[in-house]
Length: 402
Ligand code: HEM
Image: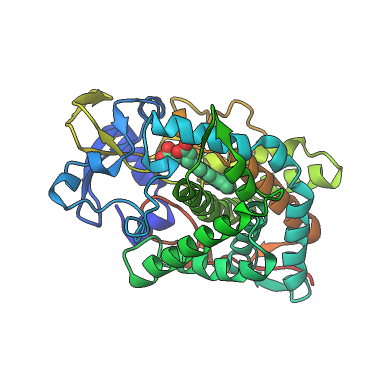
């Protein structure tokens, strides 16, 4: 595991684990030992198990100052108090507060803006006959979209693009630039929140400032941490949904034709099941984020000790033949599809409605505008980004009639 060949196609290794060692203790490239949970039923149960904490301080190694989990630079930047790192009751309070600002209505109203962004990006390369869809499309779309939604002024959005680029290029690894990018982002967000407090608008940051629950408000630090996690959780994931999704379509021409014909006929029903199937088949989040046992427990018959880290392998669970018929086949019409691509339980993806909207818009714009889109590289030569949690391509060269 964790080799170049594994990054290109981890599914055979996951199939082996599911069959022979469904809850498997492994040593990660960072040297930390963790349990991998690969079967669907165990994965779903584990994600919702309150005996597993999200707080890295529960890690047995953290107690000895050796903890190596979390986002680099995050601790120093004081952004620890975000949703993915906390447990109830704090999680319940913060999630309720942010949910009052990040509403399905706000997301739905954003659709024309996302389509406009997608069209503008496609305009940038449509005349050229070739493009790298990661750098020119999948990467900028979500960062501009979330910046718009948060209320980051247009003239500052390229800074965010650069900081996000730094974070994604280093795959969350412990290299210097990431910490600096996170720090700048945090300083910028803190300042923006401060400025908006005196001049509330329609944007999500104003919504976060306004959010209150039983008279409680987010503190300024909580609002900054929340804005940061929305950016951080909503960015690389969506890049990978667009990248992995387009790649899967290009490699499955029959399925791609089905979708393209449906879209040309004005039928958007298939687009909805297609985005869910692409999430199941080759989703953006390979492993759910870290969880730590707060007491001894058993998963799939395996004893886990207090403080031991548990990683749920979403990519393995979502191809479990005990839950999905013909799991290694991409079937855009699949209806019985309770995939774990957005997680499960109290940490279920808060941004799922926005991610779905971006996925649908990106794919329909691309296939509509560039109907003869084709891969311009040997699949064996494509490079996948390293990093433990996410799964995504470094580049996706394509060609088409200009
Ligand atoms: C949580 C996947 C897009 C915000 C999660 C989790 C997954 C996930 C698997 C749970 C992680 C765990 O339990 O360890 C995805 C995928 C996306 C996507 C596949 C794109 C296709 C977004 C977007 C946003 C977002 C666009 C926001 C703008 C969040 C937040 C959490 C989260 C805030 C933490 C929720 C909590 O802890 O209560 N996401 N996500 N995500 N996601 Fe997403």
